[in-house]
Length: 479
Image (tube, rainbow, N blue to C red):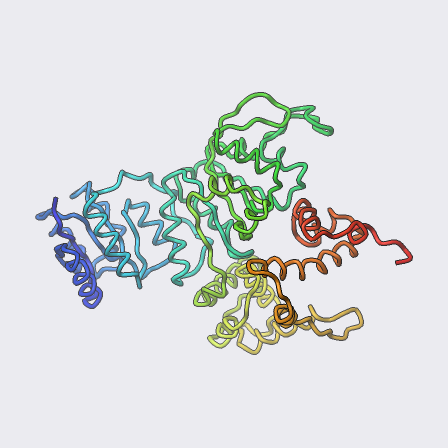
């Protein structure tokens, strides 16, 4: 087998670095700097792999890969690109590239993949993805490049994907991208949010029910698994799924079949499963709140989405993107000055991309000038902060400094080794739960909704904290 790599790269400095690294691994490199040079080399030589740039002087390295396939059907292709968007990654995958590396790339990882490719040959032919369309994922930062690469690696298989990330990072958008550009694009994309469905109804929503299965079941109901037949089922906020539903979901993933509530027929499942959660599942597993065996069934291919604070280089592009969307929805057309973008980058964006989107829409509506500058951005930020802090009488109130309170607790607490986390969590959870229960008259279901957690989770934590009935029951009129 040939150990020669054909490198098509018109940047001399990048070509030199790649050549030196591959030759140090015992591979031989032939360099060409154009599509014409590439085709001439392929017509007269034999290569272990093709490593090609996208933007070349005489054309697009991806768009012309069909010509490569005609000359060398089994030649593995690795794509390099400075046009580092999800669209480029999807195009490379659709052209049957073995792998895709955005510039700047990790040289060690590139060498590893080239070495692997040169020894194993070309992959099996892949299914052509759906036609390119406007993609909802925006950003060219390094953290997002890792996300794009992982997306392209799961497009042509049915492996279960678990998307992890804080609220507002775009987990459903990633699930949609996997579906739209994957092998099941012709089928339906069905989403269900486990946190938004009452615990007593979630099994019916997932698996369906037969007529008469329970009070109010006046007709047969087809669940999300059956609705997603031939397509993708997106299980959002899987960390909030109650234990009884976790058991049935695990059984379904193991057997590949469902049984409607109240039914006896086994129905084969034909849907790609993509799950997501903003929760850290490891401590939930340790606390018995999430099944470890279910986690392993779901966590076949994890994709972790970075919070916006770790990809602030994308904030400008995201903001401009949202301004364009806002204009398309009838809001005034705005532009951002460089100073405005810098001001946006200084903000914490705890709600991540979702919070940024909402702010930009508000900016499009309320800005006084078409060209929005840093003063306009800051004024809206400060106005929102004052509004959030203002009580009924219009006087601002000081926000409690939780970091300082936690520091004070840590300075005085003396838990045994290995118990510090639980002790700190209990110290802060107890007053939080007391407040929620007091605000809802002791109603645990309403308190759980106020807190944004599952009722079963609240009940378990109340037991763990040994909170007495008097602490959790409705308060009397006399106090």
